[in-house]
Image (tube, rainbow, N blue to C red; front, side):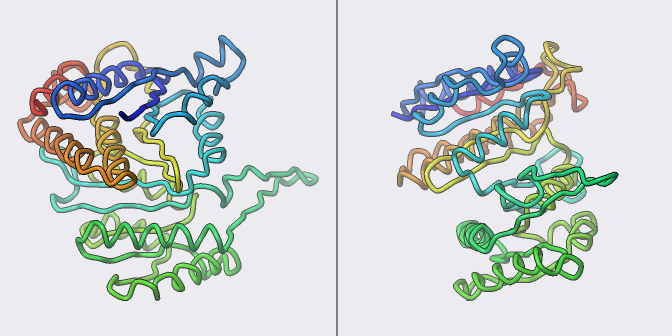
Length: 338
């Protein structure tokens, strides 16, 4: 049995959470996995009720689960996801970007992954006022840089596509911090002689993601650059609605859609749940890898094939120019699972 904690979130969060629960229940009933799903509160709504965006009870339940799915939350996002990343040491943020049929991708053959360091850089929040200026402290460590580089090379070897890692930084300007990151990645590259390795400055990478996105396989980069480039990559393949994400540590992982809570369409059943459904697919891949469970791998493939088949058929939700509700879209995915 796998215990799955599910933060239902704010805005469109509960609607797309219902879509994912339907997928998980179909897996329980038809695909041979025993899943126990615990719905949890975190975000703006529970902050208003309790004064805490991430209640202790929610955190305790997450720690006792095998993996966590998290729907988007509102303005309190930093008090939820950033805290969870730090407490659970989820040091690798994984953002695939892949072309799907009938989606407005720049090219049809895009299939890349951004591996973003998730624990340091400017996101540690060390900012200070000094006179009439504000100062931010940027932390880049050898340990964090090496472990995210190693994760990127393992990812490239498991994907078995171009077998290439692109290290993205700005070491020509930030010679100490990005210089350390670049050197650390270069050192880890020596352990993977069968994986091609290249350096690219972040501005050139931003340009090439638009000019020739199909040339990338695995991108490894720092926290801030990864945050920006991964949203760019999502738009390159058609938008955030098809963009899943994972936050992975050595012993635990959390999976979430990359888009926000979209309060403007909340309650209208207009949101595309694909990003969250594909995040669940990533969860099963991780569970399969962590536990050596071939059933989890099979379920992950079935989920992706089902989403691919639905969008190939031309099924779209209202927010991307279609006429299907969130619930109707997820039912179409379920029909291809069973």
